[in-house]
Amino acid sequence: MASHPEKPDVPDEKLVRRAQRGDMVAFEGLVARHRDKIYARAFSMMRNEDEAVDLSQEAWVKGWQRLKQFQGESSFVTWMTRIVINLCLDQLRKQKRQRAESIEQLDEELGGVERQMPMVTVNPTEGLERSELRARIDRALNQLSYEHRTVLILHEFEDLEYKEIAKRMECSIGTVMSRLFYARRKMANLMASYKREELS
Amino acid sequence: MNAERQLKLQAWVDGELPEGEARQVADFVKGDQEAQAMVGELRMAKTILAQNEPEVKLPESGEFYWSKIKREIERLEKAEAPSRPVPWIFSWRRLLAPLSGMALIAFLSVVSLNLVHDNEGDESLKHLVEVENLSEHVGSISYRSQSENMFVVYLYNKEQETEKDPELEPMDETVIQ
Image 1 (cartoon, chains in turn orange, green):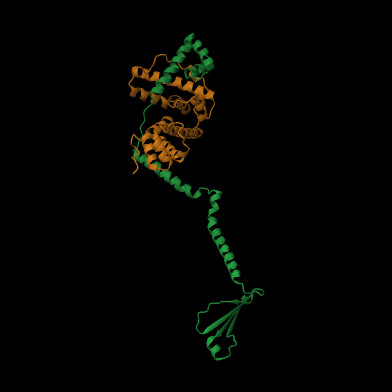
Image 2: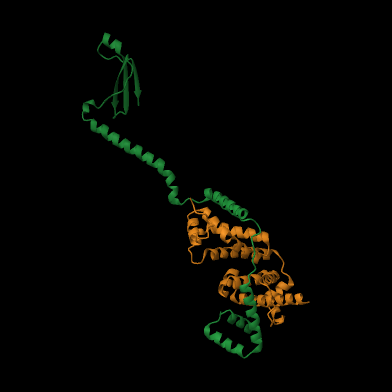
């Protein structure tokens, strides 16, 4: 009898090996373990529940199809996260081609707007409960364009270097640097504005 | 501060500069208040984000979520199965069964012909071939000539043979050429 896939004492590596031999119960165990994280990454990039569910499921299907290629250079969940990020990037590119850019977005892309933002010198998140802080970060991420949000996610949450981000986003390292600079400044300013809202 | 200097400060904060250049930037920041403020803001944004990724939960049940994944995997595997190209080496396999059958027949034919020839020691009897006849009343004698490519079977009435001439009178004659 196969061991229950969700048993916490069964390491990912063992489930992966079983899944690589075609054991779908083992794969189901991996999905059960990491579905929230994979969904969360898709949601952080897409900002839409339905799309995030669809893309995260597509990532799992691709994960199953490519499982034999997984050699264990990174953890399984990191490997799966890369798959879902790539799917989200593809989807965002498609969407970008379909929608007209706003003047504000074009300004952001061209650069320079960030230099007009006031410098935030006092930490606007001081004294906030963690849940409130996370809610504000979520709100601020929602106000960024997908390029700025994505570069922040890849750098701060996925811990990728400039070079790697440039490769994934199909742009130059210089573009990554300027997008990251703008995104950070915008985030700091948004957090400061939420603080002002709270005080007024 | 120009854009290039700002991006360099950011690269320094992110640890992306080579050692020598990082030392130069560090020295510059020490003596420039605006640079210090900029670095402070960048570090704050970086730290806030890195430690507080918003938590998001899947908005549907795990079973339902998995069932859709499983269904899609099964659908794709079914769809892939017939269209998957067969490697050339395997395409020969479907010819192997009839080919091996034909080879076996050819081999047995050659072997049996050799056996027939081996048994044909007496040249005078070469033209006589045994033909099985199951009738009590009809007898048969066959004659084969390879040089003329001819095979003749004489059928005769056994009862007449005993009453009449011991010379064979053909009742019927079948020639196969």
